[in-house]
Image 1 (cartoon, rainbow, N blue to C red):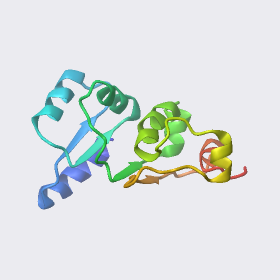
Image 2: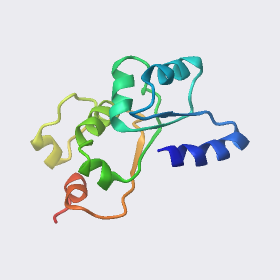
Image 3: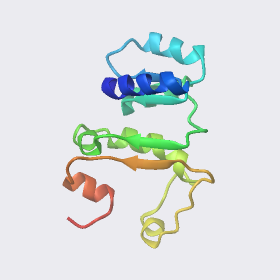
Length: 136
């Protein structure tokens, strides 16, 4: 996450894009203060810390247009699937709960203006295959 933010800051400096980093292990209070100081164009965050800030009301995700999840295989291996779901579901789906029948029939209604989600992975692990609903 720090490496991504470093590249983003060097590029963002030239095109005036504001960015912020939210990761566990860094001071929560300091992060909260930086978020309150100004709007942020690009937020680089680990799932758990982003959920914590969102649940506390520090971050509003209603105007998100793009979500990039880097190293999705690692995120799943480290147990972040529930946090990622808690973040993405309200941004993407109109209903709080989607039944298996609705999912299988493709009758899931997306939120109007739902963000584009990009997942990157170096390896196609069984967990990533399940997430993409592809047979192993």
